[in-house]
Length: 401
Image: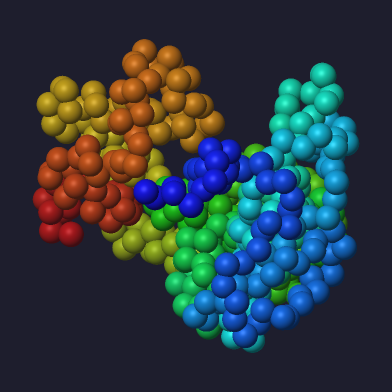
């Protein structure tokens, strides 16, 4: 039989528990030893931590596995801080470390689980922490994460993932991005720079836009803001009154925020945007002069923004009643979302169900609710508004344009 070599049922039961349970209650941490021996078997690794002791080394093709165990006889509960000696069980934690002699290095550390004797503590069993080596639940050491972070900052995530393989570090492109996203989660409270530049960027193209502030002297980012025309931008400008010069583009959101919060600052714009501002202002005036008539007008022509809003209103009113109603709810839901309302608040305000509002605006653009005539008309809104604001409002002339 398969278990004929066992002398009694006790040894059989212990062996079956060891094969099935991942938290087998070892009698000693020194049972964490490798099964095979190789060239590196007699090597002793010095990790610089007094509470880790080496049990052995296992060598495979291009990889090394170092078996360690913690030397402590107890641990402090991470929830209440109570120190406990009462052991519950052991488990092996696998942590990837930097390469050794061209070999991938994996640390298998046997750590203990302890009972928390503090009656008021909600955590009854806790694991021995390894905060000096890796993050909680982390599979990589701090050194490996720093290597991934430094390379990912210089390259794209895919190229960084390929380059890390040369260092015998396994990290996908998504892992590189996740480690980068942990950087800069909070902006520094104090900033001493007086020369800054501000611009927007797409966190998710066509949907979420954020702002970045750069120190013009060091050319390094100093703040990431959650929006480009909201409370986050206003609060950051209010916390940095020492700023004297701001370089920006022609975005109206930045101009209005700067003039409202710190109106005395000097705003600097590049040549392209200065030329663009000048042409956008002069061309409509020149067109009015060309088309002006000696007859006195009975009414004033609308400006470009007013003409655009009137044209858009007529375009959105195209189609049947059901189509117009759905498009109206979609536009109102987007406006309420931009004002900071949640899905539930938006649904309550419009008298609709939350699930209906979620399906209506989640990952949907306005083009999904427009018919072909509306899509065609939207292409000419800007041009029509310019022509109408210049004094041309007859259909025959508009068709010729």
